[in-house]
Length: 290
Length: 254
Image (tube, rainbow over all chains, first blue to last red; front, side, top):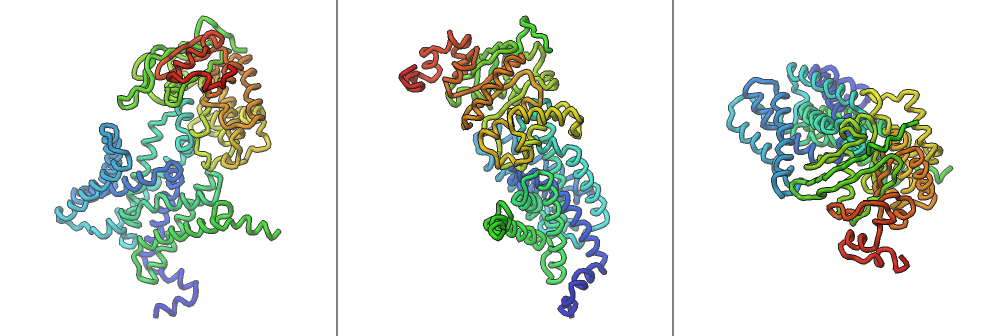
């Protein structure tokens, strides 16, 4: 039966829209993707992929504790996200252990704490939906939180767009002309924690780092202008989310995994065929025919 | 015209120390520079040249000593756009997706509003600065597509656009073509005549003799400081470079 409705592209797209949960999932995931995609440009240029991974895993115990106490899960996640970064900075400064090792051990420690807490705190926490995301089962209160956080991040990033770009590019110059570099550092970290919080609803804690780095990496291969990079990053993130959700609907696949796979395929496409930076350098290829 | 007050030093660094997590990078360093002076900063790799720059820009905190810029604190000098830093080529991600115009515009950020919207005067300053370094044909070229010399000129233009009275240049002549080298030398003379104060680090001893009024030899601390003709002696240079004879550094003719 399902296969028949496949035959027209029209019904491929419209059929899922008849379901309330699908409309909500598509809208929320697009919003989340846009936020993560926006931030992604900064994280990839700053070289914070590992930091993104660390923060997104570290929010786990925060989410569990917040659920158990009946607090907004974003609050718990935010505290643990920023806390993990503070702890990483502290251990790095006070010991001789190298930074990537510190990052690795702190976030796995937080993550393990989260898993242990889930098994101990008897509540209606669904471990699976935290780990792998559940965009199809998002609740109304989660929708409100997600919209609020997303708008907050977008507003912050928009206001400090140029300063953050300068901070990623040449923090020393920023400092020299009297721009508060420490503030920008923590602003970017705060946005990272918040984006990880909203992103984990779409694709789950384990894969949320992909939302934070893959769109930026894709865009980086396609342009030499920062503003274009941000736009491409956001668009590719949204498109991947839509593709992922549709594919998961029709083929009954895990939604979070499908979204991230779609992002990975778009990255691979850019990697191979980007006009200037792709393996096959299409620009040169076409120039040969002129 | 800027009035030049020789009573006050433009840069006055007194007994500054910098340490990174307990490891001393620079100690008891002094530097006094007046308007219109060009000073060469000479030392081995790891002798604290970049640390010295970092301290003067406020990028690292000094653990001891004090820095006065035009008699004021470093913080107010930053706010007043007094100091410009021109990074060495390795200090910059040349693959960053940004073009010449936008880099030079960053020189104006400190004096813009919070959204960094360029005003007419900012656009003009950027245009003029790019013209002075002869890059008007490359306004929208991504920095990744520039040569080493063009990239160096881009960052010099950023410092010009900032209208800073103190220029700190980390290895301005390393990895540049002859044309850029000539252009930078000419700009230095102009800057000097405009009353700007310049501190530049270099590996090339010939450059020191050519433009520097003063020279600061460092090896974790100041080995020697003064007029180039007096201080830039083979003995001092040997001490600075940890006992390596200047013959080895300059070739036997010097």
